[in-house]
Image (cartoon, rainbow, N blue to C red):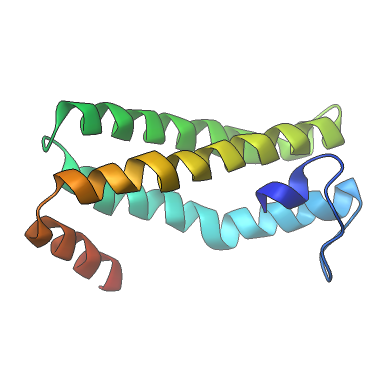
Length: 127
């Protein structure tokens, strides 16, 4: 999704190439996948790791802030004066968020949280 939204993105087979098609695809993806993803991370992961480590708490706060920014970017797609630029900004923000989670946040959780806590978090996702 992040790559698709950026200006100059390569053509992905079966995915839209025009700004309006990308907008519609992004809104569907957001509604069908990302809303639940953000909510699950905040409700399950972040809530369960609170107090484990001050640095981890700070990063969790930053992740929640990024979720807020991304929600606002998705919510304002239809009001964008320059749709291509808005989608590009959204694509870059989404990519930065994903990379931060994958490279910093999740590894720190694995490093600092007990196996028991990690297991509890995993179980909460299945329920």
